[in-house]
Length: 193
Image (cartoon, rainbow, N blue to C red; front, side, top):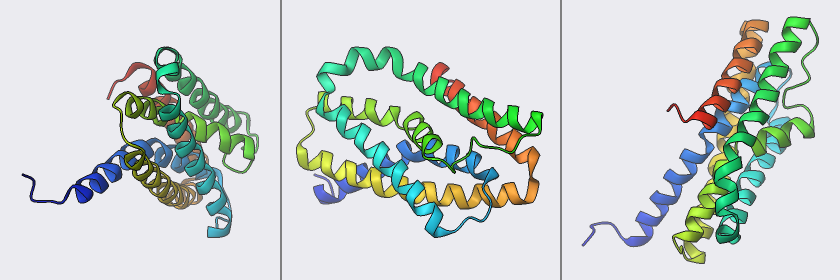
């Protein structure tokens, strides 16, 4: 018999799941935000909410349609995630090399959605596994709530941290951020870590 009540174990499990899923969100927003100027909580909150909604929605859809998508997701999710991060990271590097003003950051809705989806494909796969594990609706709701909250908090922290790095180190930080995004994409594709 466990010395912790079952509800506590479920909450800890949901929190740990959320932390593992939002690590990519934190990394991508940290790297992408090195180009952001004039960062304020008012500007960051909508971006964080967008990432949280995308991550939570994809996880929910994975759980909802788990049995249907299991074969297709395993084959293409890693490739899609890699290509999206390659696009964002490569664009950041090319714009620095060409001397262009960076547009591949988190300023536009298109870039926010690309970053959100690229970092949330693993949440879709986790939703599928929860469906196949026959998790109850209550367990999934706790997991979804934890994923949303932790993702929003990690994106806020990532953006504020990344923008400070960008302000201090400028163009080299932008190139490094683009390289890190490409490395995250390669890790998704080839599972180095």
